[in-house]
Length: 433
Figure (cartoon, one colour):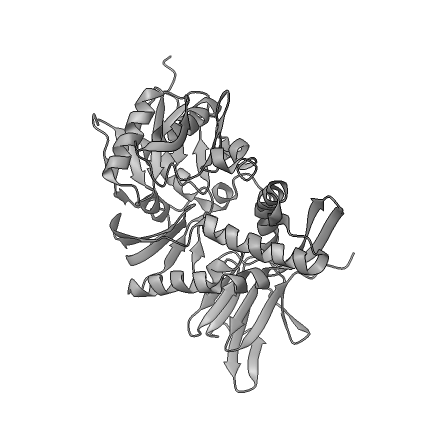
């Protein structure tokens, strides 16, 4: 009996966090960092954890500026950015078990020249490239029955990428816009300075004053941000020559410090003139509070790779050349299990807190604003509602200009809803023991 051919590897090549999945199903992650060493090139997390210790040998622009121009300080292992990109692809290919075939999901910001270089790097591994798929198109192919125009937002290391899409029987890309100063690197850099200022005020200690302190802050920052994605504040701690320093970090403070950058991103989105929904990659969800200010629906982490796996056979059947695919047929949404990527599902909020009174959400809670402020109750026709099925709570808005600090399609305890000058905090009330 003939064994079925192994599934191709899928690589979602967005440099703020590259995702890769092989035939075994394990999901690998790697930031787009490289470090020149005496014995070779370190990439991904290994390079990220040393990037601020050895800035002269650290690179993170090689996917953003994928080209053959000479490096300013190359060595025997790397002459240009393409060599650094090859090193990271090689490490990913090896970690995936050296698959013979790969399907790439690529952001729309890649130029034709960069796509050609990428294909050359893949051929050198060697691995057969089955296709290049626009990552935004793949993400939107599983959103359900919506038809019309929509926008997709992704956060790369050095820029934000907005893709205008058309949803009909297929999902098609119409245009791509770029905002150069709204990448993950810009948000993290601004927040690192904000946190450093807190430590200076509290302890007269500046973690950015030394390479070791700077590296520690940037290494710990993603974990702190993960905590603030589901709660309004967290405790942060740094090891210093004078001992361990800790302080309370509030999500609202981080968001306020980045409001100029968020506003520029929101203005660019508004200039698109789209009446459709704004979809965003899970990478935006790693920036606490930003998705709420943009009124974005954050898609699950496995959205792009799930779509590529489901469509891989149809995409590559009978093809000899490799094209950049910018339209795909619709597919069913990947469902809660696929979206969870094997992680335990966080519990949804149980109550809405307003002026020291907690209103139970139950299966749904209506919210209406009048002259006296928010009125909360069981009105199923209220213009603003929180709907809950016991596993997930989501916000349904039909009439108000709101800001949500959190994911409106997957609300969590600690999220904040701002409407008409009022604040509604989502909380979880523990059951009686």
